[in-house]
Length: 508
Image (cartoon, rainbow, N blue to C red):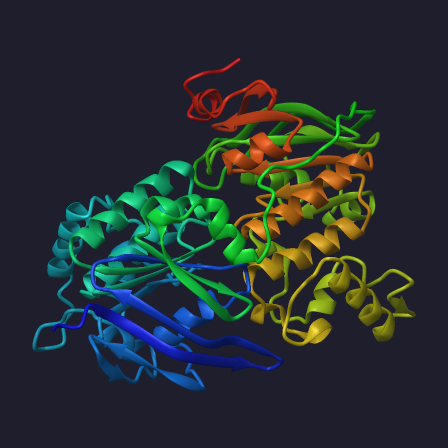
């Protein structure tokens, strides 16, 4: 009988300093199936896939392809075996075109070593049409949306004729519409006979596309189930080890005085000559969570840059507790009571090669408790970091001295949240605070945000997740093409109505 498994990972164990990332894990991928790998942040999902892709070597265990044992020493070996991977943080060269990224490393040449680009281009266009990916091969990566960058990564795998496709958290950065499109693409690929490993912690997506699902928890294998035989609640309990509350609990609260007052704010666009944010005015009061909702790319990013001081305003004023912040520096804004959980945790949230403790005092290292006459008070910094690690359940291999880069995405996010909330700000700006996090971490972060509101702080939430917007906020402002087109009450509005505002089909 022919072997029904495309890939088998048997008894894989992978260790890092201070941590067993994969502890005797067995995973079997059938030919032509979509197999989900589910687990919390730091459960060992990405590590396991990195072992399969040749980025890491396991200390124990074997990998079989089509029933035969194989050695995968690096990604070139993986590619030779027909294994491709779309990473959570895309591996693309920003200043290259889509086409150049796709053929990178496997450039077609003639017998004189000259590049045969026209041929490659034609093949990319054919693949793009066949799988309904609709990517412009001549666009530069830096000019296209994240969804398009992801499709470029998928085309990279298809161009290399990979049979086994690994998607690592592929929907973390997509809009709801792009997610639906990606799900369809994945189904098309499986129908063509490709075998797909889909790493995720979004239960609804797994239920929608996966045939089977294997669950990891804290580096151990919990079990494999057929998705049609389980509920979302059962899956989430397998993943977190307890029942998770999908709904945010928050008491009634009457907003107090105005904390943040924004008048006629406009911010220039990077991609075209006009403004990305157009004449926006609104207020946020003590004890309320105001959420800016919208589809990605409608000016939210530039708005937050303007508010937090990363970009100058072209018009308008920002007032925080009666102080004019319009022309102040980022440090001034921080000292005057503004905290910012940024959308891009790698670019604006952390210094990845610093330790966890140094990241925790990034904005406060000059305060008397952490510095004396220009010298850092290392003991105090360490004690403070240990306190926050304990309080926010930040998991890492080596505690305060862990290098930020080596931590899982969810734990990196917890470091930023701990740092920003512990400054006791009067205004907390949280941009996509739960992007790429699992249900347990999301529940925790939502609690922290609501806790700030209950303490009378002003919270400005910017989110692309429809459920998060409706569940967490007290007031919703919908942003479309840089303007606020509607103010909605989460208690009385429906996802459908909100969707109409987000798509620009309706405005107040």
